[in-house]
Image (cartoon, rainbow, N blue to C red; front, side, top):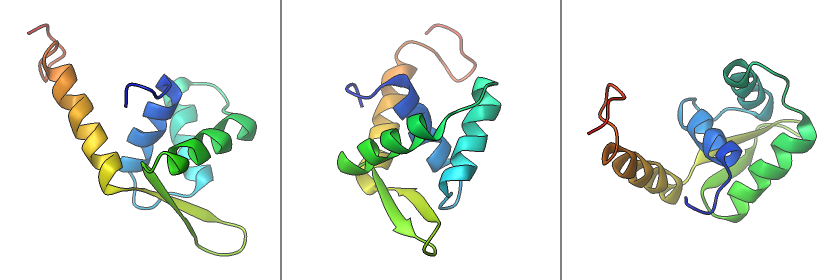
Length: 96
């Protein structure tokens, strides 16, 4: 996960927190977090990068709507990231 941008990491977490979200649901989740609009030109290329890296799977709900889910590798990467973070901060956000 070290080679991902912060935005790409946030995409992984947003996908992990939902049941096969479609692009608009992911966009809305991140807009709520960032408190600003996320443009399609930023969202979809970054989702495609995560698919290309094998962290996310992209499926088709219908001809107009894709959905996204974490792969096993994507879940492992999130877990590894959480373990790495735990070396520095505890569950309450306090330094260890």
